[in-house]
Amino acid sequence: MPPSTPKAPKALSAEVVATRPTAADSAMIAGLAADTRSSLREVAYVVKIRLKEVPPATALGWALYAGDVRIPKYWEYSDGIYFKVLDPAFLAEHRGKPLRFSQNGQVFVDTGVKLPGPGAPEGKRAASLSALPRQEDVLSGNASAPARTARPKRAARKRSSRNRAD
Image (tube, rainbow, N blue to C red; front, side, top):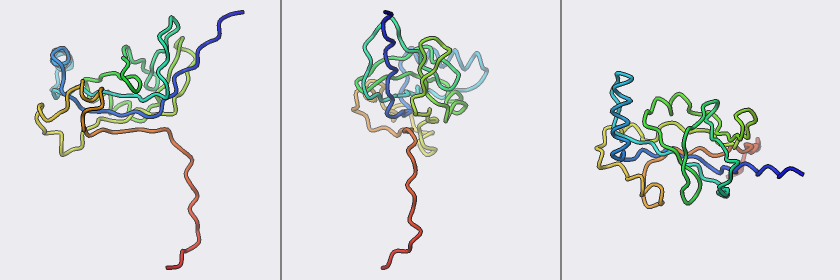
């Protein structure tokens, strides 16, 4: 009898947090800006996906997708998994795409959670690098950072058509 396929992780929410880039992130941002001949802000966006339960590491790992785009690397943190985005255009382009898991790139399990867009509100865009939280703090839960959160859609409650008496 073949071994059973493990269940896909159950996502509870996703959020995008603008953080200070690490030295490696800064080098990658500079290279990306040179490749695209554009100016990129010194920000690393951490996309945190909160999971009901972090699955154990196995040889049959789950690949993560935003829509049809495979996220090449993701890591574990205490409440789930995360990945980094250095170009906010990626977040803008894929905003609202379903986050999905696959073991073979052909059969997908939709998490019910969609990728939020870039995190910082407009007023914060001009904020200095030092005003952004450190990635370690965001991942440990010690940062109070502006974030964009996406949760699974729930059925909307029907509103009563009756007028309430005052």
